[in-house]
Image 1 (tube, rainbow, N blue to C red):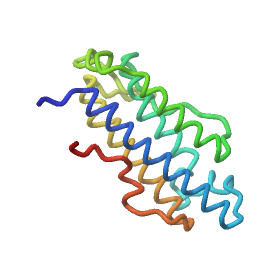
Image 2 (cartoon, rainbow, N blue to C red):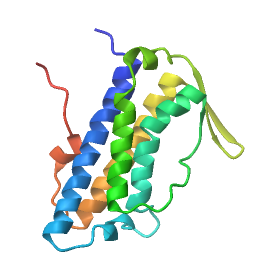
Image 3 (cartoon, one colour):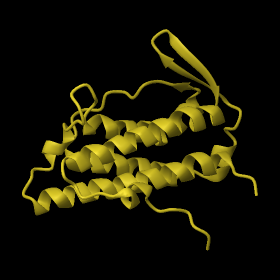
Length: 173
């Protein structure tokens, strides 16, 4: 059986976003159980020169649903600024990405195969075709920002494990 562009992009992104949803939910439960304001987590970082949780979630959205929208438009850029979000706003941002991805059809995404997409950052440009952009740029970035989300919350004491990161696996049956 051949694997489709929809399978490698949308289905994979849905798994990661589902996991990030669970990670954020566990973070909220940890805050409630430990009398911590969850909004303190929004600006949390692993180290000073890395972006905070807020940016990680904006990037998770950007490299999942945003990547599909970029392919449709033929132009990809760094994530646009997203106004201040509280912890519940971060959760909603992920939920919005999930809903947007679930609304896409396999035919709609598979029809994008071979479409030109250019990543632009100022005068810097990287030319791709849709499948190259999604598999070699968007998905690795999605995993990076999802992992960093996990790491930030784990470093703040949220009891997370590998199964939380894996999300709902696509098993036989």
